[in-house]
Amino acid sequence: MIRNIVFDMGQVLIHWTPHLLLTPFHLTPEEEDMVLRELFQSVEWVKLDRGSMTPGEAIQAVCPRLPESLHPCVREVVTRWDAWTLVPMEGMAALLGELKELGMHIYLLSNANRKLREYFPRIPGSEYFDGLMVSAEERLLKPQHEIFEALLSRFGLKAEECFFVDDAPANVEGAMEAGLSGTVFYGDVARLRRELRKAGIPVEP
Image 1 (cartoon, one colour):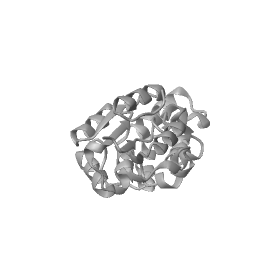
Image 2 (image 1 turned 60 degrees about the horizontal axis):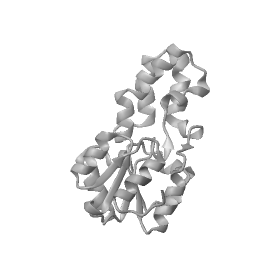
Image 3 (image 1 turned 120 degrees about the vertical axis):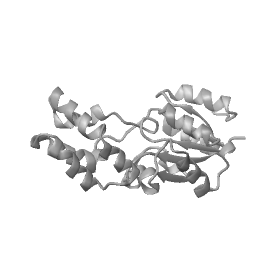
């Protein structure tokens, strides 16, 4: 029986689109491509999520690869992206509330930097969560087996009683390898509701 629902954050609880993140900076297409490549697709971005690099260190490493005119953009994105891009995923807050009413325990497992706990309360539905696990704090990343084991251990959960929701197939596969069940979220809450009902959780259609 499923008793616990574990959610990813980006592209699940909130929209996470690096392209839209850069809109306030009015970059040219060429400048946008450079920032997407050198920041969002960089080793430094992964290290931020793993907790092996500080925001200041990431900025210092990334900026020399970009024109000086783009350095303010890098600094703002690394340190303040949540100030303008916390866009809730449609229908998710209502689903979280319904799951809570059904007696489910709700947890977050996110590949994110240490700042997550600062902005997470501003995400609709955050009040329903029983616990958060942030990759940077654990120095682990999904889909590593160890981060799922850490989640189960930290909150005293049984893998067979957990259902995991993530937008990345590799992360869902990693959860399944650790004994959890789960589904890939494609931005469609109605579809997620169907998957939850298949798992025996009586949410509304």
